[in-house]
Image (cartoon, rainbow, N blue to C red; front, side, top):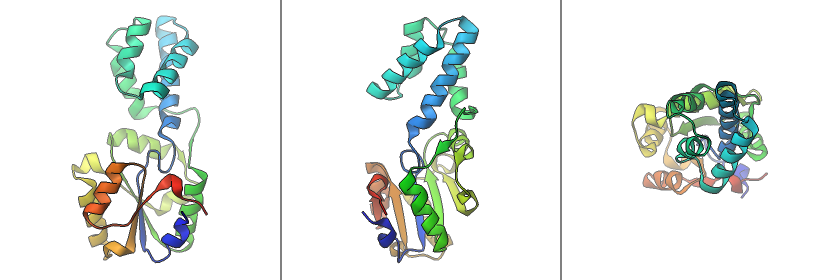
Length: 202
């Protein structure tokens, strides 16, 4: 899908963060790496073995209950859940998060064409902000306006409406770029055009 043509008559584009601008796993796997290193330091257990278990479990079954599964496998105290959760919120990543190439090029084109760029993201606000701070934006950061849905305690559709209202835009002057059915449903509730991020090419 040639999003550059699709966005030609738009004044604003609204993005989700995870799996839209970069792969969520690029963040989570670094968090798991840091947690495994922490456990090795604290418990003298092999960090590489722990990380490999967490990586495989994540790739097979996702992130749900990953701490509990890891704790059971390696006989870790439940108290380490605190450290695990805290790392998700404030981890200093060894490597910066990199935007998908197609998204980077798309956003650069939007800036050149003076389109407004918004990020509306769900999930823990501290964690999402931590991701944003550790992303290599290639200078795009000064053009971004970010909304954290969980902090605002509003459904995305309401945030979309507020963005349109505050920028004097009609629904056909904006575009939502997402990666899941939820984003699509929230967009369709207010008749916002929607496209899937990974279908975008130049």
